[in-house]
Amino acid sequence: MKPLDLTALTAPLEELHDCSICSRECHADRFSGKLGWCRSDASFNIASICIHRGEEPAISGKEGIINIFFSHCNLQCLYCQNHQISANHVSRSTYRMDLPEVIRQIAGYLDQGIPRVGFVSPSHFIPHVRVIIAAVKAMGYDPVWIYNTNGFDKMESLRGLEGLIDVYLPDLKYSDPALARDYSGAAGYPETAARALKEMFRQKGAALITGDDDTAVSGIIVRHLVLPGAVENSIGVLKFLAEELSPKIHVSLMAQYYPTRPVAGHPTLGRSVTEAEYRQVVDAMEALGMYHGWIQEFDSSDFYRPDFDQDHPFEM
Image 1 (cartoon, rainbow, N blue to C red):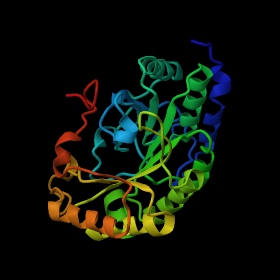
Image 2 (cartoon, rainbow, N blue to C red):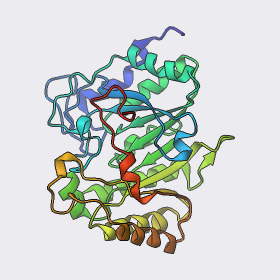
Image 3 (spheres, rainbow, N blue to C red):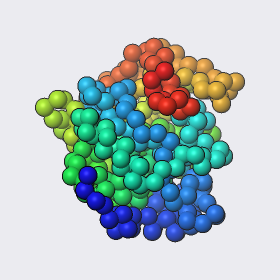
């Protein structure tokens, strides 16, 4: 391994003395004890670095992807499948790594022939994303970098990632502000995510460019999780994508919703999506002329249940 000048590489973290990198714009000093909305400090708050083989075929490929799961989140979705690591009210002091350990783990997987690295829930850790990319490149590696986000990103921060991120993998959760407020504590989500998606689209366009192994090397894939009782919300999301971006954009329409423990008794979120609900959304997507991407098998919720109390959250 090449020796790294960590002092020079970590310069982007200085932004965190007055943090406004995500849409919350708390202006918290994350080097102090006075933390902002996400309750994250300036260290590398990483819950897991692991190989994940359950993403879309263009993302996982045959080998899988090296996913870096940041802890805490700038959204607090009631139904989050990663709630063990994303809840801001829970202290995650054990989920901290230093930069050499982060790079050591990533390099170990890259040496095994895994050619893709994904940042999961990175919106509140964009300076850390930049540091990790710079450090890995300084060691002579050149993986495909994937930004896997909830979509609640600040447009100006995304501009700073231009030329660094190869594939954007955003959620677009809501077109309905009331639903965004009630389920994720962010009534402004539809407007904020629309700006973020337009910036990603400006950088990458509608085409998903793939390599010889049919995995993505550049572009955007937009994920949308169909929620129970929220068909109109989903249709609104698809209309935005088709009409404001392009009907040729790649969409991953997910049926995998299941009630996690925190919403087990919720009057709406406490049940699964019905096959009829999912079919309505699929039909709407086809009516909008959106034929690029993926739909899921309806029973897919049985296969996407991570447990971050395990050494590998996706292998039970």
